[in-house]
Length: 302
Image (cartoon, rainbow, N blue to C red; front, side, top):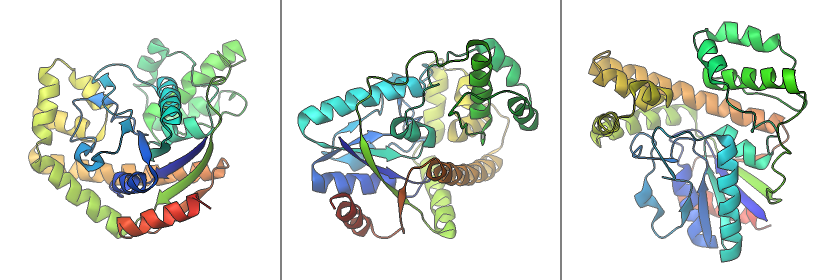
């Protein structure tokens, strides 16, 4: 099965490009976004479901907010989606900006099924990033394990995996043996820095205007804890802090805007890591969506 992949940092126009390509080649979109899987988290994750029109999509709104969801479950859900699309004769388009989720499909991760150690996580979560990095450097890493350490959450997961391997010396299960063999071609949107910054700031204002504050309040009213919402990061973290009276509105906007810019930078860093890990990305200059779609299809159908 040949898989078309469209990736890029937040606010780069990935969804619109994927939809345009899907319309032209009888495609369907499989989301590679670690937060769009949650129901009720719509504005803050930028689902933009109206943009899909008649284009089928998968792995959006598949679990309730607050429910556990991880990369191992994502791999299984993608496997099922690919089977469905193969049966339907549609071209699968994997689209998103969550580098870990993308790479778990393109280079299946054999340590993804290492179980969660809640006690270890609770202890590590109290430590600063520098201390966590030192702890990871003091552990023997499993073979073929090249962790991403740019966020605290992923750094803690890396320590968790390395600690598990220290006692077991092998992956917990065979690496995704039932996953279908795929040949992937990757396309990335790489907007100019100033353009990316402006789009992020404009989009944040639009999301606030569209009811982001009310969306987060609704999640809190449904019984999802502030700690869980803060765990989801970015919009959900800062808006929760605002609603709890910890930030005023101007501070909310300023800090959240800065955090999203930093997140976009981390995304680009992860995409470069993917290239170092052997994945080739055909980078597109940010142009009109139709022009980018034409370029993607031309290269993909060679």
